Amino acid sequence: MQIRKGVESFLKEMSKLFELVVFTSAEREYAKCVVKWLDPMGIYIKRIYSREHCKMVNEYCIKDLRVVCSDLRRVVLLDNSVVSFSMQMSNGIHIKSFLGSDCDGELFTIRKLLSELAKEPDVRSFLEKQFDMQKLFDLYCGH
Image (spheres, rainbow, N blue to C red):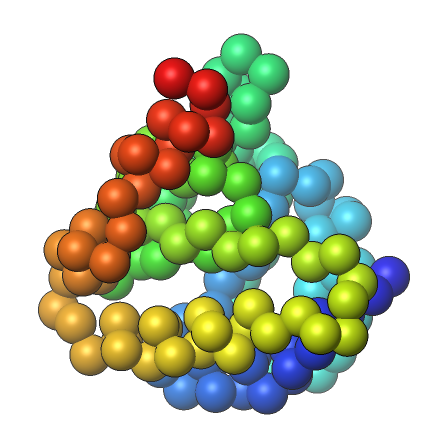
């Protein structure tokens, strides 16, 4: 398994601003292994939600963020699949897939955005201004 450049410092810094939770479409046992590898001391990542917490719509695995928290004003999902957060488009940030490149700087870009977002009372209005997620979703799904 390859790990994205800067992931440890990213987790450390973001855990000061947010409660970090993993929400994955992977099976629970696999997710636990990955989290253990990313955060071996269990310092940063507080909870794990896995495939059993997702909704299957056609062949897509959709993450309903209300499983994590009913008040979505302070919930953000970073995901490489726009479809994953299609139920709450205003809570999602599309992150590029990690392909193993040493030149990958995605976490550095996301870190800056999340640092700004942490100051906002409602992440949804901030993200709606930053991104037109519905347009991205439509492009992603071929609408």
